[in-house]
Structures are given as C-alpha cells and as structure tokens.
Amino acid sequence: VQLQASGGGSVQAGGSLRLSCAAFGHSFSSYAMSWFRQAPGKDRVFVAAISWNGGDTHYADSVKGRFTISRDNAKNTVFLQMNSLKFEDTAVYSCAAVRTRYSDSYTLTSGRSYDYWGRGTLVTVSS
Image 1 (spheres, rainbow, N blue to C red):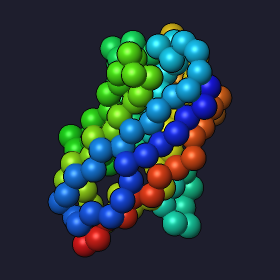
Image 2: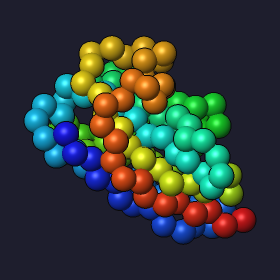
Image 3: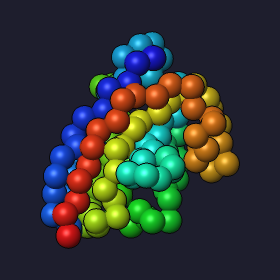
C-alpha cells in the first residue's frame, strides 16, 4: 500500500490543522493506521493510531485532548485533526500502515509495528 500525506502548513499557536493520509492499494480497511512526527534534530515519535475498524484509538500524552485521529474506509483515508496547536507541535508528520487486527497500545504505538510509511507533511506552528 502507498501512503500520501497532505494538509500540513504554517499556523499560529492556538490554531488548527487537519492532516489527511490517502492510501492507495487493496484492503485499506484491514490496516491499522497511525501518525508519527519528527521535529528538527529529534527522533521520530508516536502521535496517534487507529485500529483497522476505527474501534480503538491511541494518543501520545502530549496530544491527548487536542488531536483526534479518524478514518474513512470508504475513502481509504485517515485524518488527524489538530487543535490548540503549540510551538512544540512543529514537526514533519508521517502516516504509517500495518495490516493487523491487533488494536492494543503496545502494537499500534510502536514504529517497529508498521510496514508502510508515507512521505511526511510539514507542520509549522509559530508562537
């Protein structure tokens, strides 16, 4: 499966952005999806994940209550709604996919679980 992220841009602190990740391939509904981010000079970290059927979601503590991950299996797309953005949210955001029915946090929050990665989209938050 190929992944294409979009929706990044520049926004002031307190603003909102909605990222999209379009998947091209078969059986999108069989894949758990996630978002990771990498800030300049830092390692890539987990942001949010959603199970194959949308029944389970997981979030990094730093984004809980501000970000919401969702998916539209009919459109082969996963979204990340980001509200109340902070300067420290500045990063390149990448989506990832793994074909799995597992929905636990241990599996879905680890980058090692994912087989497919899209090119990132840059989010810049100015303070």
